[in-house]
Length: 371
Image 1: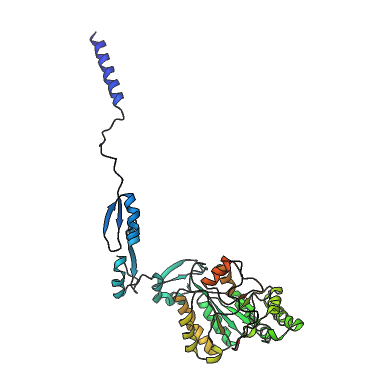
Image 2 (image 1 turned 180 degrees about the vertical axis):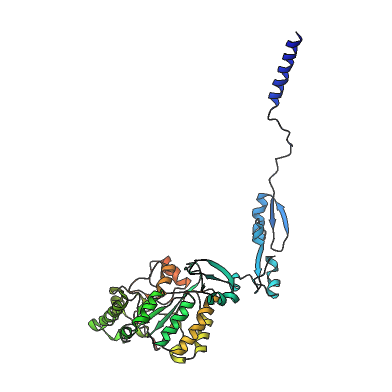
């Protein structure tokens, strides 16, 4: 009997224990209120608001993300500090900047394809060790410009220019005269190997709007054939002498699959023949999307460009060919269309409407310079 009672009691205990399985104590609190949002100001204050209040506070300078009220700043030695946005001006007075690209530049190793950010003061030492400026690729969202050169190739001048381009991993566009090509085959092949645009400045620099029929077509045909004989392909683009064109010129350019390229910055290097003047002209006016006009037949021009290439890259510009800039900014340049620049406003006009072809000028464009 005692055993039966004991078993019954044990069974009761087990049932009670099983019934209590999974039951844990919980704090009972009032959940009727809204969850609070912590918000911040640019001078470092913080406060909590209800979700409905938080949306209203965003309109008067409060942020719900702490990182939004902070700015990272750097000194020239690469040291950095994180400050509240309200304190940025004070730190700028003490030598700090929030412009990362003004302190650091990208370099890459062409053998290992490693890319790193280094202090601008250290870039040249990397270049001397075999690294290249930039990241080895074109960033369509980063500023870029096209350096373009007319009337060449020159003998020693173009060689010096190609040396500077190669050292800095930069590229340019060469608008060459067809009657200069035959004696410069090695130079032109090197242009191609460095990724530069090999383009046409017609055969002998005749003003195209003074020609018609076969005479006009011959300026394209002879220049194209001479380039094909050297590198197996024709000019990527054409620049008419003096920037002069009309409907007939546009029609022939389209037939030869060549966009017409003018310029947005004229360095007037042919006029000044002064390296300092050319350098200052560019650095004081350059902007994203510029097509810059030089002549690679003057020593003074090359002296200026050797200085300009690293200086422009230090300013954050990618030095690309005209066709590369066209591909990156508008998906390619159209044969027979006229382009003077690819500024952001021009790009918007091209991609945002049915109008194509850069900042196209009037049907007959006359220039009063030596191009």
